[in-house]
Image (tube, rainbow, N blue to C red; front, top):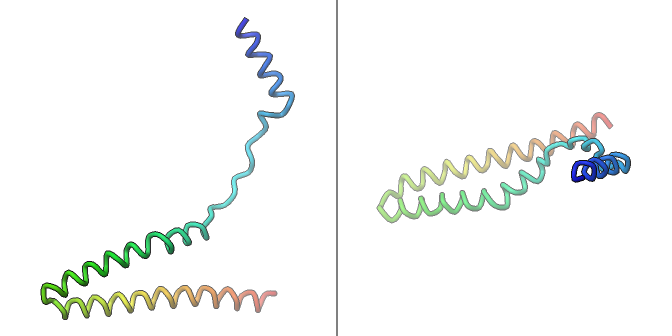
Length: 98
């Protein structure tokens, strides 16, 4: 009795198209991932870096703090430069090929 009822439900589902093929997979949302890192991860990492610098400065290691700060600032400048070149390059490609 249960098997015939189950078979009837499966047949009804097949006829109504409920068990259609899965949709084509879409791409990975890279802009969402970048936004997540920019909004959530980067401020936390910068805060941790700031706490480390303050801790070192309080122990009298000011020269190490200044060196680390300079390295961090140069690193941020490289990241900003890479992002700028990415957008400038995209604009140049659109200008040339459109």
